[in-house]
Length: 406
Image 1 (tube, rainbow, N blue to C red):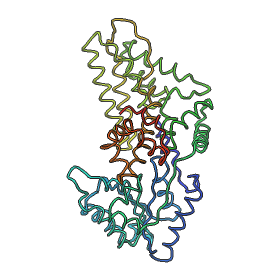
Image 2: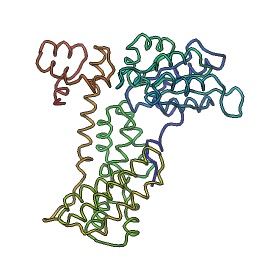
Image 3: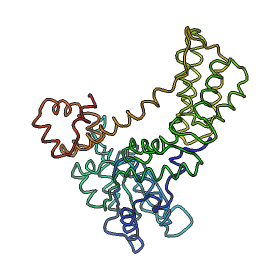
Image 4: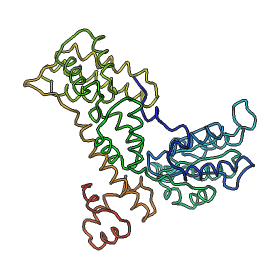
């Protein structure tokens, strides 16, 4: 099975990001390290998910011939952890044999430090980052979704003052369409233009989401040589109605259908679920599908694609069970995939609502989305004057907001 397209087609050069001005600013900051330690040792790159922030940091390290060292601030949020993992490493040269080779210290999700955690504090994480920027002998990039969350406290503003800041805006629809067409051409796959436009529209400026949708939604595209839906139907039918003991043959069919196992398992579950007349076999089928799903989850977490084979084995085993229904059941398209478009639009509206309202109350978008959004939704529904004022100040489309039905 092939690797996810988001990794396969991740930009390896800054020029591939399609962000000329942004790239110029990043290179300008990086060049300052060639003549010593600049006054602003850090660079904050911020913007919505899927806009190329992490890819740009990786590409910058490659083009500057720097070693790339990444930490996730949400995982090492305490002062001790940051000092142990990031600050100490920033004071030394590269671990490679090359002398004077810089290390690019990258801290992702730094805005998560500015939310109250369960214990009620970030355990000194903000101060540790500020200290890192004072002492580091190597370039530091801080990656955030919400720049306003970074500046929501005195320490946060101090951190921002020690860094140059670059915003990664959402990709335009035309940019996303261009990338999707290039990927399809490289994969020798045909997709109708309206399908490509729909994916780009639903992505809401998130390039990663668009590429995932292009690969993951089996019925979005067809190749000129294969009817993907018919192939999927044939394999699912062999599994649930064939009652075959040739597990190896079924496994080969699953692999040859040309679909990501994460999508295939949705087809299998959707069509197995109505077949519960023989309860023992039905339970065994769900048990194997559940275990297959666990292995697929580990593939994503560990980036170990060899685990796909275990998931395929477990799904193949379902073919030897006697699955029956009390009535005829038609082949069903996965409801989860069917609803992806509407769910993506819902998430996009909610994210924009959270981000804009967070700016006016000086809270992060994540905090608003998690804890406060229903209260603002309630107020805006019942206070027409406030609603008009907010709409005029922010440009929010209240029809979209009220469609959230919080």
